Length: 581
Image (cartoon, rainbow, N blue to C red; front, side, top):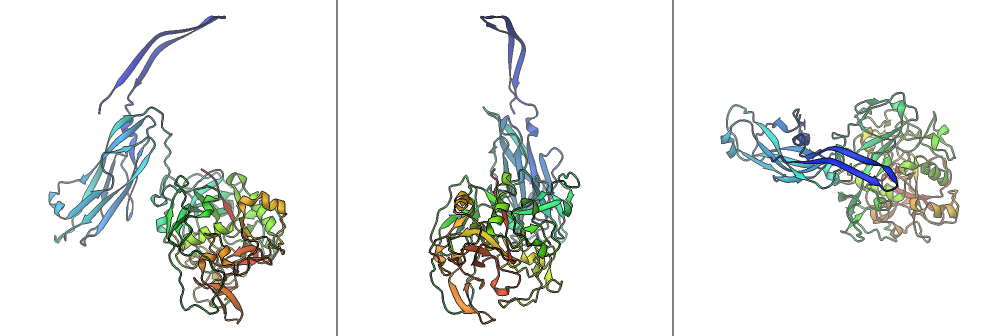
């Protein structure tokens, strides 16, 4: 590596001013040259095998690892690693040399070793690149004794000059599958991991703390105003110090699976469901948004383009009421951000007008752009839940009749009717941090979003002009807050499914059916899971989603119905944050 130095000797610089008698004299040497410590700036920052993390040695230049046992032809193991340029002064040409630690030449006939990063490659200042070393057994190994093979991957670097100072290096984990749409953690949000038992830990964001490919969604919390202690990375956070939980929904485009242009229904019950895996690709707002409108085309979900963000933080649970010790105490019609909690096992805040819900959500945290969940934002969560990154089926109902958040119906409870089995005892309903509870999550594990089926009906910010609007909004306010509302056609009827907004998980869930449930009452249903599917109309102009704890087969993340926007003891809500980078 060539070392160059430039030494400029400044003997004297005298600056004089006509009307001032003093002069400025600067003496000294200006030494410009190659930083001796550059070689320590290009390092491995992460390494993982399928069975867990791999330790990187002290100077961060080598990864030594032992593969898992390869015993079947074509069996592979993959080392995934990140290499980072921490220098602000230099870009770099990087070469990675991987090889067996011992001279096992004979193994070349058994092992096929490939590297995804073609050396040398350029690594600009503060950049991190991810590489994959794949080792495949290409021929059966017939020795009787197990042979251990160790490998080493070494970094060799060469500096490249820059004309400008690079960004300061800050190591933050990024999920490769998200293509840059990683969580925006700022202001009062604390990134966390949640153990299966519900224990919350302040996440080390330099390490993998979420993985959407593995259905492990990113979580964050907002702490109470005066927590019991100051928390740092790695600390377990006391539940009493948490005010609200949120889950990150990364920006994505989806392949339109149904245009939703339905204006009528079929008077029979379908013989089979057409529910399908929704195709999703993550992206950032630096990529031109897809604007498809017909089946098979791609559409960047409007929940993200509306605010031009790389994702949204969604309340992990239905919004609760601080201090409520009974379901009745959580029935309060007021605008009061100070009473908001979003936590498991709390009483859902209900019996409030849409206007009071909306203004409470809007003023909860303006720095994080908090607001009442829009109908399209509900759709964004519902679609992600039904992709390979989510539970990819219908989430289980929260059948807790006390309106406690995060619960799930136990296996074997009958939910086949429009009046399902509900209650409060552990044989009927179980909390979020149990094997049963996970089934009511959008991921099928504790990292997802709860209460999207059952619990309380959830008003969302989606409406049509109607004569029976009891929301409490004035026409002026509806205009003022228009960015935070989804608007639907003024002439919509209960079956105007073609009035849908693509992405809102209403019309696209067709075709629709009109048939009697077990109680002999006829209702409108979608084809996916038979969830109730009533569009807004002039009598019921505000959408509500998810269903209630007692509605059994009608409930689900694809349930939609209209209501007045007024106060009802079974109507709750959900909050969303849309912070920008």
